[in-house]
Image (cartoon, rainbow, N blue to C red):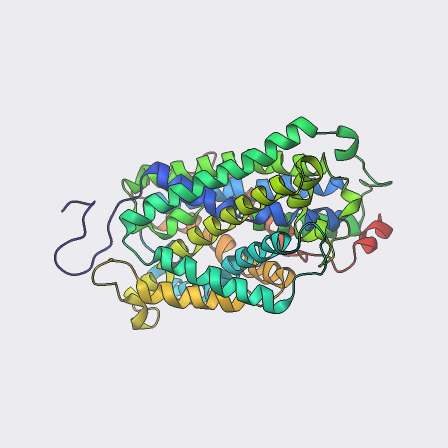
Length: 445
């Protein structure tokens, strides 16, 4: 059968995604609206540039965790990703059924929440265009809901087509993402002021309980922004040569996005004094759309508007990548009898799990009615406890119970990366993503 064409018989998933398209999918998912939206929240976690340490903690989580995903994804390339890994790692007929069950039901919460965060960010930056440059009033609830509904429906429509066409759309959105980040980074390089970037408050690095809680909060925000380096694992049945493509796309994505994120964040804090957006408060221009205000100060409102549109393009690309991958998880579980059978249906001509796509897409729109703080808190807590930690143990169990399993990729320096990911995840999971009172951390310093 030709992988490029849909079979003439029953609906069937098509292996089409190459390394380029897989990397584009992961990076579009990872970058999204995160670095343009969360820098005020990150700085508020510790009350200054020292919060960038949270990025290092997040990186210590995602690099070794990316190796975990790579080994599992290369060895078991199928739709559903974590659902398959947890089921097989803990035993299909024993504890694995419970782990797969727990993952599916936490995913019904965390998956749409992650997509919803992109819709919320899209609405915030769109608000800059609607009322720039006066910033007359903070974005209201009805406005967020309306934008989320429209963008959510557009996202579903873009994905309601055959995978061969989706691959081309993915690359197009990815190119827009690279252009957006490039514009911000280039501006930061030309205007970077180390006195602004490294303007630490007194006692910034004093070790205390408050410092640890703040560092944990900053780390959770960092992990949220990195989420998505594994998105290709969810559509393993639609990837060409998955044993090589999946590990390559995951590792390339993590390295590339880590460099981009550091450049973006230093571009922002090296241009705009952090005290202007710390503490982060809803309705403040430098909290809601800090990059747009940054560009307006440097180039004027016209250029800022263009960059804002590019940021919204990036947000749409992330939501597109998320919904593509996440729509395959209930489908895979239903196909194996672990979830409602209706989710296992494939579209008769597009060969996509259209029921799962529609349900996850609609739930994501509903989840966008919550605040960004609640979305990040619930998302990270549920994702780390069940999914990330569960997969670390799944790798160890599979190496013990299935030593002959074909592993095109094996974790480098195993088990050290797994232990690092497990330890750093505990710090990240134990703190709130957005502190309720930034000065509290400062006083504890």
